[in-house]
Amino acid sequence: MNLISACSSGKLADVKAVMGEGDGDGAEAAASGEVSLDINGQDASGRTALIEAAWGGGADIVKFLLERGADPNIADKSGFTPLMRAVEGGHQSIAASLIEKGADVNCRGCVRGTTALMLAAEGGHQKLITLLLGGGARINDVDLYEETAVARAYKAGQDKTAQFLESKGGRGKTERSAYYSHSDRDISSVTVEAVPQWSAASHDAMGVGRGSGHDFDD
Image (cartoon, rainbow, N blue to C red):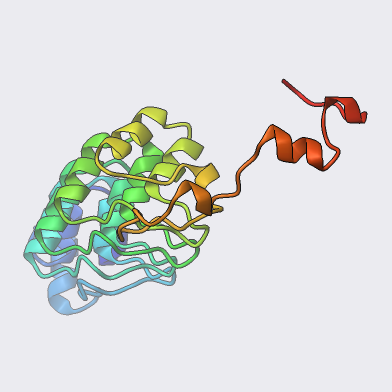
């Protein structure tokens, strides 16, 4: 058993044994050098022991690894760090431990540019959102589709969470993203005139209306 698989078991005793800090065959194997003890070693998917423990909800294992120098900012091949996996699983206490040890709250996944805050928004985890914002998470970062945490919460059907983010200064309803990208910069210069406007007069001038033979929904 190596360290990553020991963390997968969810048993601190197994992890301690592999680290040579417990009793039994695992500790003896660790002492003899028969198992890998690189605390930041990665498997074929790029996962570390800390990523595995954070994802699985092993709060005691996460604390144990962090106390022994596990790096909270190593990402797997998808770009997800231990913090992102913890948030994905809704593990608040683990996320708090990782942030306390210096986890980057604004890290991004490789595929879509997802942040931890976006994952919390999609999962409806308002306490995690508060934790991340308190740790310095940027509320209006956008992913590669120019969607913010607010937009992704609405898309996931997490309306209350989206509204909670908006109450904290979040922007980015999906229908608005075609006109401007939401970031932390001041958007006071974005005016109504900058967005294409509809009017009945302009609609009729193009020969489009209820009398034009086209059917429209009310």
